[in-house]
Length: 59
Image 1 (cartoon, rainbow, N blue to C red):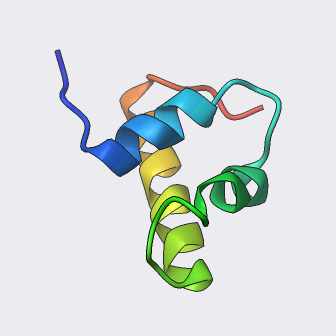
Image 2: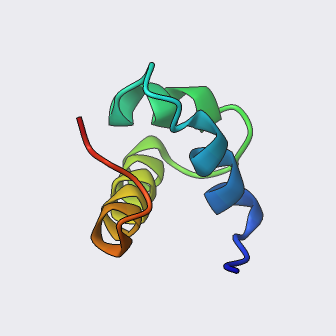
């Protein structure tokens, strides 16, 4: 079992195969008080971690 913080949980929910990294960041930008570049970087880092763990496939 792995517990995600709120941002991680939202990213995970949006990893449904219909959006790319930018689409996921765009979907989150109104929810979080963070600049766009930092948000995109956080989304990319989180997704890379999921891929490295084998929990997500990048297609």
